[in-house]
Length: 355
Image (tube, rainbow, N blue to C red; front, top):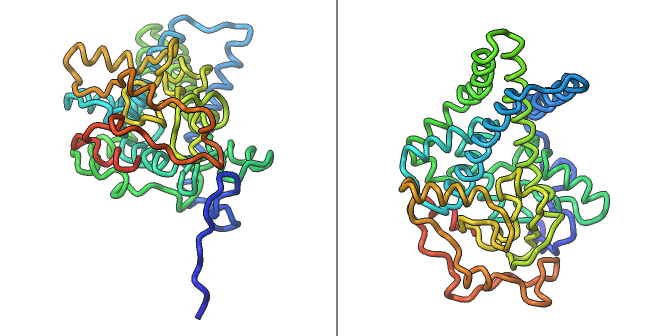
């Protein structure tokens, strides 16, 4: 009889076991083609927009459309997809849940169900084998990190067999009829996110050129910027920045301040991985967290409740002690009993279970 296969323990520095040739092949041609189109199309639009703006400038109306569309869809991702649906950081009125899911779908980053399932798997295996987009996938050598950063930023979307099954990672969203409807409507919603700036441009200028420029800036440029900011949280925020808070073993999530404003506070990634259900990611002085400010506004309006704001005691309990660290030899995080997350609500039970 053949010898039983014994799994090699992960040491925090070696390449993941599934990086052997052929272990995780490319996805099917249809998925690869669609992914390539969704990634390359907005980048091509950004290149065209920069070429048109060179020496000619860009209209204030186009920049305004870009800014408004970026804020709406970006907050849909950070407040909706991430803090509400993935981590259950607060509870929201049904109408707001749907509005946030639609706004996030307009970012071209996937359906609510697929986005949440993937992100929950990321937290379950952060920077360890099983993480769908860790920059440490190919090891910590210069070559390995170069490949890993590309993988974490965009390459992981082209692989087959590394998906997060929704029935395991997002059963609560599968059971939510409104989220199933929004997910099925994803193609129509993304088309609408391009049609709306086109229509606004036409209404403002009354001609096709103005409509196309609005589509370019409020559609393709906005999608390209938001996509790469989101993907940079996956890649750069696990390699660059400070780690003042303790996290799970091998988890290298870091606070990377240059992305704080364009990511609406998501780049305070170290505290987020230390306390995933917290509604606030910017836990330090001067750490601007626009998403947390929006949640606070919604709370004042009565649209959200049961918000998991971290107390000062909770934040301080998660600070790293001298000699702790998050490198290969770091011990698993152990928190005081009074810092255990509160009992999860029905919507967030699956999210907190993977932490």
